[in-house]
Picture 1 (cartoon, rainbow, N blue to C red):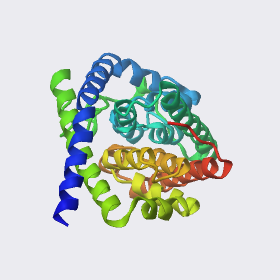
Picture 2 (cartoon, rainbow, N blue to C red):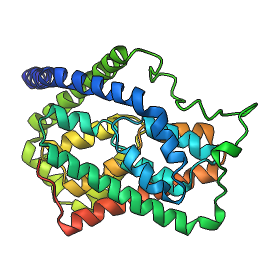
Picture 3 (cartoon, rainbow, N blue to C red):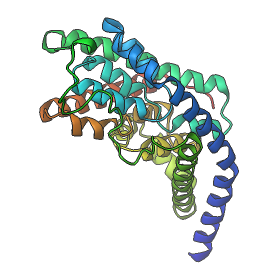
Picture 4 (cartoon, rainbow, N blue to C red):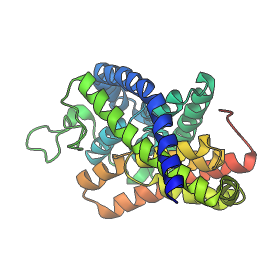
Length: 298
């Protein structure tokens, strides 16, 4: 037993250390771009009007969950539509892209995955806006009062631990350490499970139940932090999960967006409806990919 734990810990440490420099460089670039483009991107979403779901899905594809948190605030202020919010949630890649980059996944493969998330998010967003057209009350940004608002539109980040006030180097380092430690833990547990249970048994349990796996992965995606995207991406890269199941979880995963939504949007029934729609479209998207046999070779 001790030997198994030691081997699992050693393998996890070696694998995690190898990708550490790539994670830091990836986050450093992302932080720089996000700080430079943040306000222009949000303005583009606000002004997109009926094309909001398309603009939102494109912006949501940018790594990390910052845009999903911003979208939650914009929706709570009725600046964007429900369809735009869902499009951003569905296309949010959270920690998926840094993991794929650090593992040396081909650029075209990553682009295809992001493209599928953007496409599904856009289609779902337009469908929802059409379905709930009469129920939506959207105010133009210019018409929205800014004084004495309970949730000021400028306060985009409701997650107090996000570190937005830090320099890009400190923020990138914080993200890197956080994900490194999480990857270390996940890799250790995954390696231990493989040793104790057997790789063929684990893979067979998931892969032999593709339909159920899609809906289970969607539930994992509802975890409101980076854990979901890290677990799902890692399981797929290790061959223990099908592509449709992984996409289902990644589509549902909106990072801290749902936590921010529940905090700033006082309508509990509306929040439950949004969570339900997010899970429904994410699971359906993964199911379609699974049944159609669409794969992205990584």
